[in-house]
Structure formats: C-alpha cells, structure tokens
Image (cartoon, rainbow, N blue to C red; front, side):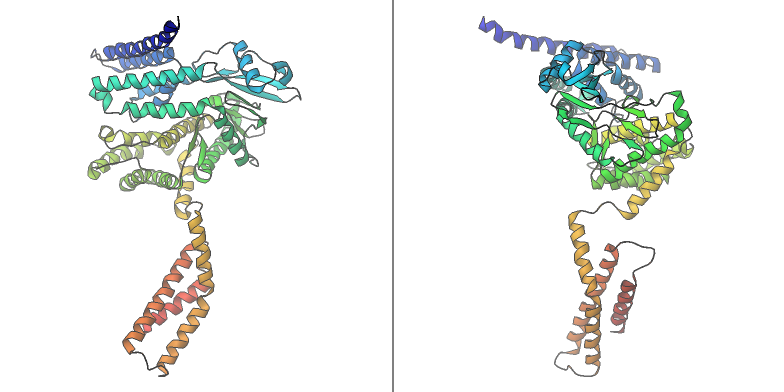
Length: 515
C-alpha cells in the first residue's frame, strides 16, 4: 500500500507532463500546416491562449509574460495573450473563508461585520472580496487560491522539462532561449505568490503619495496580511472606460502622466500593471491605484538611459537613439552599427509622418528590438515591466483624453532629467562637501600664490632655479584652476556663475598666462 502511495505522485507528474507536451505538439502541428493570412494567425493565437488557460495558473502567468514580449511574438499573439488578464474563473467562497480564517487566526464573524461571498474580481493567483471591519471601515480582502503554491511548483518543474525537450526538437524555439524565460517566470511567480512582498510595496507607495493631491493609495489595515491574505481600505470611483469620466478627462490624464513621471524619474519604482481594472478615478480628482503585485524598479543608469531614449525619439535622431539603447543595456555582443542606424532611420521616418499624439514610446522600443530578427537583443525583466507599464499608460491616456499629447510632457521631463541628472549617490555628496571646503580655501591659496609670485619678481628667493620655480608654480596654479572647475561643476547650478568662482577663475587664468 505504501509502495502505491509513493508511485502515485510520480504517475500524476508524468500524466501532467504528457498533457503539457501533447498540447504543445498539437499546436506546433497546427501552426506548421502552411496556411497564411491575418485571420489564420489570429485563430492560432486564440487557440494558444485557450491552451494556456486550460493548463492553469503557471501557464496563465506565462501567457501574461509573453504579452509583453513584443520582441519575440507577432502583434496578434501579444493581443491574444493580453486577453488572459481578466479571463479567470473565481473559486468557491467557502474555500476563501477557510483560507482567511486560517491566515488571520480569527473567524470571519469576529474579523468582519460583513463579508461578501461573491468576489469583486478573480485572477490566476487570487481573488478579491469586499468586507466591512468590526469598526465600520470598508475593506477589500485579497485571498490566494488554495493549493496554488504546490500546483505552481509542480508545473514550473514540468514546464522546464517541456521547454528543454522542445528546444532540442526545434532550432527556432531554441534561438529564443526559452529556459531563461521560464526561470524568469518562476522567480516572479514565487514573488507574487507571497503577499508579504505586495504588502511591502503597498507601504512604500502609501508613504510616497501620502501628501499627494492627485494620487491615492489605499493603506493596509492594521498590518493584517500574511503570505496568503492581504487586507486594504476600500476605495471607489469611475473606471477609465466610464463615459462620465470625459468631463475631467484632460485633468485626469495630466495627473496620471505626472504620477508616472514621478515614479519613473524620482522614486525609481513604479506600479507595473496600470490596466483599467487597477485604476479608479475619484470624485475629488485623485486617481486610486490598486494591486501592487507587479512593481518595477529603475536604477539610476536606466533612468538616464530612458530620458535619453525619449529625447532621441522626439528629435528623430537615430544615432542618439542607438546610443540610448546601448546605455539601457538592450543591445549586447557585437553589433552592426550601420545596419542598426539604417533600421532606426526607417522607424523614425514612420513616426515623423504621424502627429505627436499618435506616437507610442513602447511600440518604438519593441520595434527596435525586432531589428535584425532580435540578434544581440537583451531585454532585462525590469525593462520589460517598464515598457509594459508605458504601453498600458499610453492606452489609459488615450482613453481619458484622445487629444492629450503625451510626448510633450515626457519630453520636457526627460530633458530636465538629462540636464540636471538624478539624485546623487553618497560618493558624489561627499565629493561635493569636500569640494565646498576646498572652494572656501581658494582666497587664501590664491593670495599666498600671488605673494610668492611678487617675492620672486623682487629677487627675494634665489635658491631655486628659475625653471624649477616656474614649473612648480604652474603645477600649483593648474591644481587651483582644476579645483575651480570642479567646484563650479558640483555647486548648485544657477543661471549665473557664482561670483567667487568667476573671480578665482579670472585670477588663476591671469597667473597662468603671465608665466
């Protein structure tokens, strides 16, 4: 009997693996029939999406990941996979209640005065219920699907086996390095499955926007969260597709863009999933962001690269655009610069023929990734999340106000970022402080050097050779002059040079030239 119990899990694994492989073989066989045409491609894309839906959570998430890989897939497949976002059936409310009670250590009746069994929304990992706390506060309760963790762990193991097999059978599959894609999916899935990560994101954004007149982030409730349950204050408002929103559409669009500009270029962390279901537009003019399961991060280098990318695109400069891609780390290995510049010229020519309000930064980004059939293209996960957010952001802005020119707002911000830089690291802060101290010593140092120069002219110091003396003074003055330049570069920028720097620069230059 024990032997049978040991065999059955392995048997189920084999059955599941066969199911995955058989589904892949059926699709590949159908795709290789040779029939062409846009309608055929759309039909195949829908069929693949349906296969992923039938295979469960891990494959739904894989489809969602593929929906942002415009560098790998044709647009029809990207559009089909985007339909996976809201096509998941809810699980039974009795299971949700049991998981909440187990997680909180309280009965539903003790924790809430009201609890709605019908979920407000359901996704591949969790679903959301409305409730009222005992103190009268309205909340939403996000609860993880029971059994989803072992299911995802098993499916990820099988998926890695399957892609290894498919990569061996197909060189076309192998060139996209599918195993790296699956490993990336596995890492992100395990992060999403633990709601404590999302709770930390909620706290971070709550603090970042606590004084904002335009953005509202519902706070966690008394730290009532665990790996499987998360409770936040509930908020309401209009969805982006509500016709009534047009009355304040332009205002909301500006607030929305400003919020993302702040996240991209100041916070360095941003809400990565601004689709219509995660946004509410409140009566007081604020925008409420929900669901912080997917958050992106932008380091300092990437922020500057993004600023240069935006400016290069707006100014239709292909050489600058290529350099921006290099700075972002998108291009790797040996590249044919001439070939890429020609491809960029063609892309920019298309944009030059369009009005600014029809431009898409995300589309342009992925069009470059498709140049040369994806050779030497490297798209880190943070950039994929960023471009996905930008793509969704563009759609939201177009819905709020079709006449809003997104390019102008982003260009102005990008120019400011590139000109002034970003918050300085600790090393630069120290250099600024040390340089400030050096600048304060400049008058004394210059006075001493001028006195030494006069003494030399009066013949008071004849022990040194004339050549050595002049060389040493020139070195000293060069150091002072370099210090002046560094001081000016690191002091706060104004429209005019600080008077002390101008004076010191003039004296140092005069002394150098007269020698």
